[in-house]
Image (cartoon, rainbow over all chains, first blue to last red; front, side):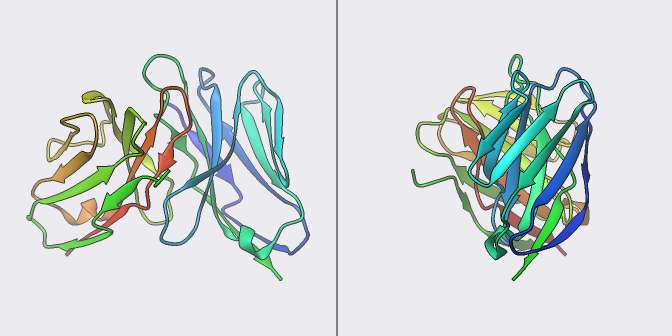
Length: 115
Length: 112
């Protein structure tokens, strides 16, 4: 089955700095890679996703890059703000057949943005 | 869009008791998923429904676990003879076909 590794486990930055979180996956059949933000006491919230036919996707201060050959993808947050502080999870899925929502998650990154 | 609703938010039970959780998905979403999340870990897939049909179950879903979605709307997850290792956050998510998952805020189960 799929295995997703996520690094770093914790990340501390100053407000206004950039933050980068990296993930690797093992199953070459995976073709969908979402990123979720989870705040304390809440469920994961989708912040951005990318499919394997795209190398990069950007949404305001958030961007995701994908390197299919190396089987890794990264989340980039620019101009970080204290409200970006949360746990971030990457995930991977093979959307073929019935498995679309069967996501394999990384272990999470606790991001702390200091004012 | 009222979001995915889960009930209860918290459940404390004694080992050996049965518990049942409910999930109400976003109304137009025909796919419904259950995930389990333990402290400090990412969510793990348990099972998934398309309408009322349960299409896939993880090896994590032992015989003590059963999920239903009788009319293709809300779903229930029952755990029989709970064990301390069942303590976790149980997350429900829903989606339309081919679209991203929307998660609820989960039910936190504590087995004492």
